[in-house]
Length: 202
Length: 202
Image (cartoon, rainbow over all chains, first blue to last red; front, side, top):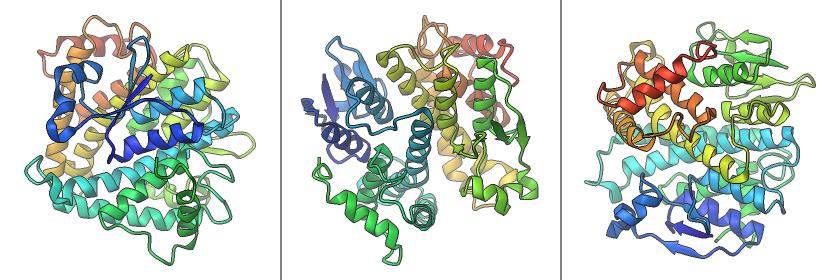
């Protein structure tokens, strides 16, 4: 197996932390988007959308999409369990992972994509949309603070892939100026907890 | 079990088709957003985000997010298999389901949300963003046409949850004026194939 990586990408970071939590070592190849390496024919053959991360198996099978890569690794290396132990638990982890992805990470990606100068001239930026997404992300953090009251982690008292998604979202948040307001004590305590894990900088 | 449903929603339709393909009968309760039923305290207790679909188990456990509901049903009612038979197959189904969701369905939801007059005054519409998403969805349909060449369904020759997501996306596409261009023979043939299934109008 090898992992095609984009070091600064929150989606690639999700997979790297997942791999580190599993205690796996998978050779990693950084794909340099600034040099257009992700648009070269040999890479497009692996993922025609030119996106990272991508896991290539030894037989050449390519798995794109961070959620699909994590699911595959969970199946072939079940311990430590990061996606739930029973059908109900797995459904709840999936629910929370989706919420962290669609309600927090995705809006923050839109803030980055539509307001950060790195993308000026690369694609059309719609600043108004970026600002709406900033408000959405902040509103969801307020909601999350209530939801996780009394819990150590996003789903319950076990660290799961939903925590990984949320922590990667907040790392991106810092980069685009969306910081967790101080009064959100539960989210801040949770973030301190996940950021202290040895895998947080994977 | 019971399903809290929003009849016109593409995400709720994904779950209804999934249930029909499994041959299950799950009592369904339509939640009327126009009457604000999804914002009433009893519903917010089930899903604090006020979104549908939502599956409530007999012990009161609530599973929100269409992807999580489908995964739970796949686990407790494995046949017919709609999410892959082996770890690699399951990863590929997940990859394609994510692609159909993030690359086609989500842009079309944005077209609806940002250009359709139904949402005028309900939330801030950013028409420019809606138009960019329209272009994205069309570009992805062109890409999909190449990808599924020679295949009966999105992943391979088995109908899976990725087909369900894609067909629900295209139903929404029709409603917002994003039709599959005639020259995309593979996508058109595929859509005719899935639309002919007895479950397509679930």
